[in-house]
Image 1 (tube, protein in one colour):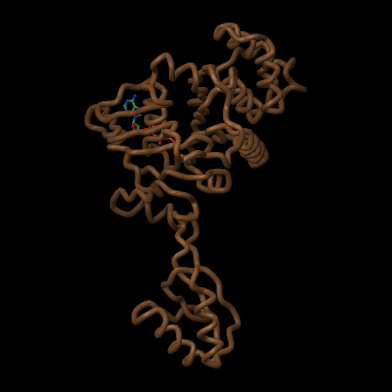
Image 2: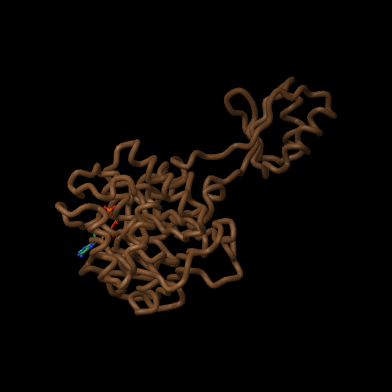
Length: 326
Ligand SMILES: Nc1ncnc2c1ncn2[C@@H]1O[C@H](COP(=O)(O)OP(=O)(O)OP(=O)(O)O)[C@@H](O)[C@H]1O
């Protein structure tokens, strides 16, 4: 289903102006949806800030679409609250300022991309110039007169984003925008989202593919089995929680490292030592080793791969662990 909506105010100037002092664009508290016995969304608290790209990540069936549909006022929550642009989801004042692409774009196959958008623009009482601007923003201006059915899947998805962008919404909600795309189409969609974000657009996008969102998201929320397991920046999620040190002689290096990091915080690993310390302590550690006459061959922060984190979060028994910065 595609939801097209328009805005009453332009997007902000820059994604880097994500202004924390401003009220969040989306806030949910205890948001819950139950279908019969099935808890599709279970007490989700999420916060999307103005100007950020928020990646909503989770495996198939995790509850992403249901959550997004609740934010759009398309599904009524069983419990909990959601605020979108300081309104209730679905309230006129919110609907007009949110653009969404949820569960695939629906267009007339025999109409051109441009005419499809014109139909939608007319429906929303927008001028024809809005159509050209939207086609331009998704890099489809050159193919706007071609029939929709002749478009590649990537172009169809981009037209869906253009439809959601008609009227310059303050918040863009994209449900699995790269679903079904080949690697080239995925890269194009990523580039489009980065481009929109650069222009200050707040984007909430869902994906089951971690690699898809990690580079383009300012923050991510990880959902599994209906529960939000984490919400933080990608860097925080990965956790720069240790240091790898390769230094010789090893015994002396172990002594110095243990003195600095404490008992139990130094582990022999392949090719060196792992210290469970803040990576920001690297200069201190290097200095102490060198002062003790130890040769430092390598010292670097250790991060878990995001795949590992995702796997751990989504396979271990659910313990919601919000790591919000506020
Ligand atoms: N209308 C419905 N009636 C009954 N169950 C539903 C309904 N919509 C969703 N569900 C169930 O709720 C759970 C969450 O589904 P949802 O579509 O929100 O997940 P998702 O994370 O978007 O997954 P996917 O990526 O596969 O779309 C699933 O178990 C799904 O079967």
